[in-house]
Image (cartoon, rainbow, N blue to C red; front, top):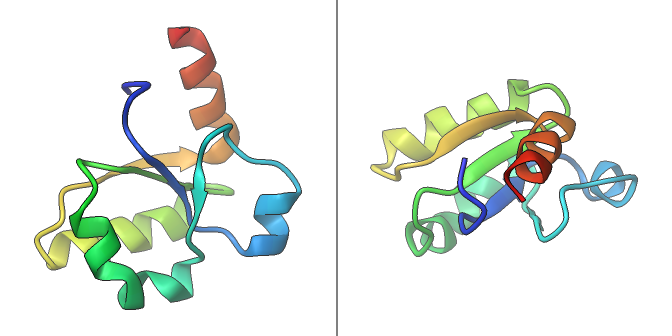
Length: 86
């Protein structure tokens, strides 16, 4: 997991406001299909949520549209991994 990759949190805005990975972008899962062009402009983004379930759904959807991305799992896990790399 590289520090220069974009991290997308697919939880609801309310969940995101309760805690998130520093510098991450909130795109709730239900908005992902309407924002494909944004994802196409990103270089292999890392997606996360609370447990990895919703981000897994988003990754599956994005990959079916030819967008390379990675499921980082739960946001706390991603946050921990990013801190370890600093």
